[in-house]
Length: 410
Image (cartoon, rainbow, N blue to C red; front, side, top):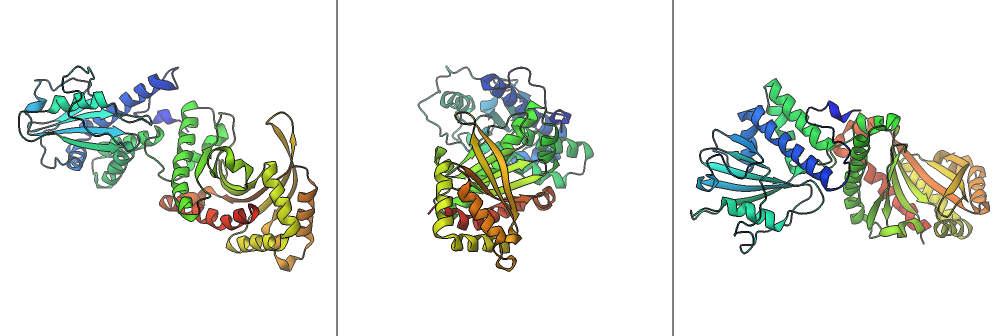
C-alpha cells in the first residue's frame, strides 16, 4: 500500500511527531475539506451546509487562512456559524468573559460564506480540546450588533467522514465522486475516521511494512478497533477495564492489543488479546507471566475436569488451537519462546480419549515458565465480508473466551 497515491495525502518531511506534524496535518485536512467542497460543486457543499443548519444557503465561496472575509464583513451576515472540527468529541463551551477584547491573534483555518451566511472553520487533529482563547477570539469575530448570536457547531472528523460517506452514493458527477471518495480515504489514512471496517490494506501492510505513514495508520486503526471492542467487553464484565496497544515497529509482523485490568495488571492474570497480521486477526486467551501460569498449574492440578469441559464448550462454539510454549528468560524483560505443543481443539473432546489432554496437562505442569494461548485465526475474507459486523464478530469470540478467562483467574 502507498498512502501517497491519494490526491490529498502529502509527504510530511522529517517532522513525524509533535506539534509540527500536527499543524501540518491540520492544515492539510482543512485544505482537503475546503477543496472538496469548492471543486465538488453544489451537490457537495449544499448537504455539508445543510448539516450546519444552512439549508437555504446560496452562492457558497471558500477561503483558507484568512482573518476575515474579503470585505471584513463576516459580522454583517444574517447567519453566522463557528464550526469546530476535532479528532475527539469536544467539551468546549463559550465563556462570554474571555477573548472578546480581540487580543488573541489566531487566524481561522477556513471560511465558507455567501451573501447571507458565514461559517468560520477551526480544526484540530490531536487528542486535546480546542484552545479557550482561540475559540473565544473566533466567536468574537462573528459577534454582531444584531440580536441573533452566532451558532456554535462542534463536529468530529469521524462525523465529517460519515457525512461524506453518506453523500457519496447520491453523486452522479464523476469528478465529484472522485473528490469525495479521495477525501474520505484521506480522512481514513490520517487517522480521523475511527474504525470503518477491515480491507486488504490492513493485512498487506505486514508483507512489506516499509512506510512510516502506513505504520502509523495501521496502529491507529487497531486502536480504533480496540476502542469499539472494549466498549462491548465492559458491558460483559468489570474485569475488562482497559486495553493496552503494542508499540508497532516497522519491522514487526503483527500489531497486538490486550484487554483486561487497567495498567500492567492484566499481564499478571489470564487475559485476552488480538493480533493483526498478514493472514488475518488472531484472537486468543493469553496466560504468560508467572503469577498467571501458577494459577494455570493450580487449575490443572485441582480442577482439570471443569477446565477441559470449558474448552470443549469453546470448541462447540468454534474450533481453536491450544498452543503451549516454554519461556526462558534471556535478560531482565526479554524471553526466548520454544514451541512445545499445539493441539487442535477437536483432540480435547471426550470422543478422542484422554491422550492429548493428559499430554497437555503434564507438559504444562513440567515447564518452569509455560506460555499458553487458546487461539483462533479469523481470516481476512471473514473480516471483510461485512465491515459493519467485524467488531461484533470478534466480540462474540471474546465473550465465549471469557468463561475460560474467569476459570483460570479463580
